[in-house]
Image (cartoon, rainbow, N blue to C red; front, side, top):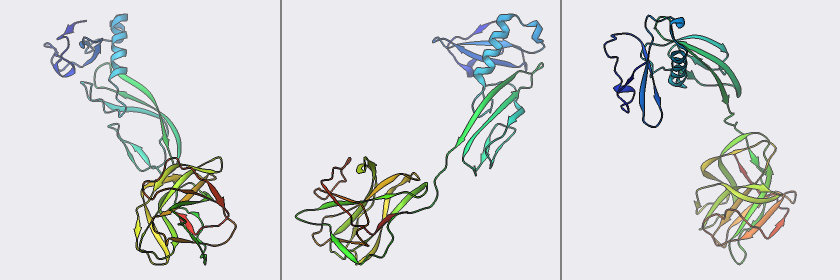
Length: 283
């Protein structure tokens, strides 16, 4: 067993006259020494215990997660695969996993690869692939056509938030609110629920300026994943003294807090509450 060119790495290792014989390389220690294992024309029985140990370590070290075998000197091919990939994915002969998963869940499979040496070197690895749900389209909030209005300004700009439960796993990209006409601005946000109170800021929207009365769309600056069965707070805020929002009845849960109009507080602290069911939702 020779040690060649300490510290120069995989690309600098030499075969030293062994032509096309198949080699595998490994690093040892901080010195970065490159040790080689001569494989051609040697049966497994001809290798000593130390040689077999080094060869096995090399094979395990050199197998990449993508199974491309780029650190092996001989061409690799997939030999066996036990188990199944998630539906919608395929494993090619070069080790590339491709496709679009169609079902959430975890799949386990074992892959074995071999090179072109005689006898062949092999390596086996167990893979566990988890596909998470990206969420589904859905809606959280109140879509009713309320005819009553509530002022959002009273000696200052108040953040008002309604509490709603998510009926499904979903990813919200837009909020909508039915607001009164104003020359000023409105914006909305989603807060987490902490002890039946609004807590941390999960996402906020762009501002809408000079809206007419009616439903207005507020695109979230980034999508927010919501979990089925969990509660969230849909908040609205305006810096205009004429700002109003519609509500459909007294069957809601509402919290409010006084803040100078600007950056959304995180976390938020509220000082009062009511039962107006604001016409506001996210989808």
